[in-house]
Image 1 (cartoon, rainbow, N blue to C red):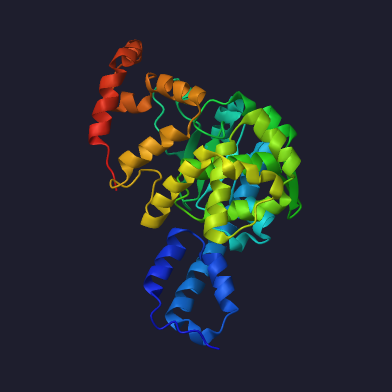
Image 2 (image 1 turned 180 degrees about the vertical axis):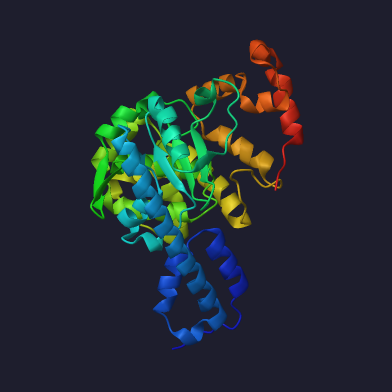
Length: 356
């Protein structure tokens, strides 16, 4: 029996599919349905977006191959966080997931060496680093190729907060390896990957449903016992609980029985409700939150943190950074003045900060 879709809002459907970056999966699903149910222009648009993503992912794959090869020859260990590797390992095909850039995790001591390699390959830094404490005040640097516009993020921490349990050496010991096109790539072990994806999605308010789909694809690969041990050692249960609650409510995903205890956490439920606030409003929270939700989102970010992380976050706010130096340039001999001037410069930037 043919379904009645005459009142279906296809314009909103496309808006949601593109906003949440799930149009590759939607296109593949709709291709298997009765073609008379779907307006031809909708299928044509989805097909175009799908093919554009294929080209984008192939381009990122070539960059990934070149960069990882050169870094390996330079003695730099790399762990790929998302991008084409995540697409192939979770979805079975790099065309089934979208990626804006490559995210590469390296040891903090190797960041400068990685930058030299990227500059030699034609990339340009997108960050200002006037002061010397940039490794303490940030957790990644962004680069863009000056000719073909590929984007790379080089991370030396998994998140903006200080967390010794996620040292690079420990992550490297637990890594996964995969061979693609006769080249070996390294990425996070399954438990570290779930923890990272949950943390990343939580920090961004899950404003793209693609991040929840990643976790749904990863769950069957997770050993529940190992995951419980991981959380006991490293924390982050509330972020996974938030993700599991959202997966269960939005996609009816069955959570492994041994991990359902994470969904019974009151904080996880509060965080899930807050994420629904952003999902329902179709907002963009990164890199700059939309003005309508900026204040709400900043409160949410603070509520995500543990007591220790809140203390370190507040302490970090007193440290001057290169944005302060860009507001008030001073000669290097006077850089010590940025410390007492920090509260005033921070307040001035907040007043001038643009919002979408």
